Amino acid sequence: MNIRKGLTIGGQKYKLVSEDIRLELCGTGRAVFQLQATESVSGVVQFFVGYSSQDKDRLFFTGYVESCHKVDNKQQRIFCRELGGVLDKHWPVSLRHPTLKDVLEHYTERTGLVFIVPERDYSTTRVPFFQTLGDGFHALALLGKVFQIPDYVWNPQPDGTIYVGSWNDSRWASRPLQVPDKWFKRVMADGSKSCPIIPPARPGAVLTGQRIKTLQLKGSEMVYKCAMC
Image: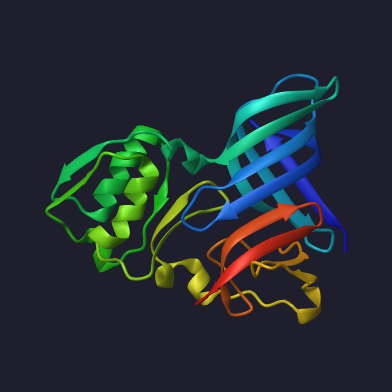
């Protein structure tokens, strides 16, 4: 099976030279792409990956160009963040009697981000107040404690939306990934493992009984680190 990769920027396809994508649970991912382009590029970036045996490649990363640097007359190197990276700035919030959905709607109105929240009691329960003077990441980190969400996670999705809620209510809780043991190539000192690219895999997914915390996709392999479920 041959790996297929695709890259679009602002809806336009570009010839991909190399990629280094790093994702994490409860954090926004980053990526470096080198591509064939004579001029600087900008806009929304989407990266697709799949195998020749599959009918359709899978969307793996959606983000935006943070900076673009000329490599030579035919190539550019772009540094990207997932869409949730816009939360990495000062976003003071002070709300009275909000629900979880109210807090997230506050950020949607200011950033355009789309949040996915499961229909559970914790998403509609009101608290006396929600206040933070930090950045958007700090606010997301507080939500689990404030709204008493068990096994709380926030997790960017391939399409740029962000899941917020209990891991047990996420799509990954009922969709574990299984691959043959022979796929695993190396185990690093920090417990990270390498294997061929698994397009559905990403932080939050369960792979061979363990929850992926961080993941790097580069070249023809993935390097990931897990925690016990």
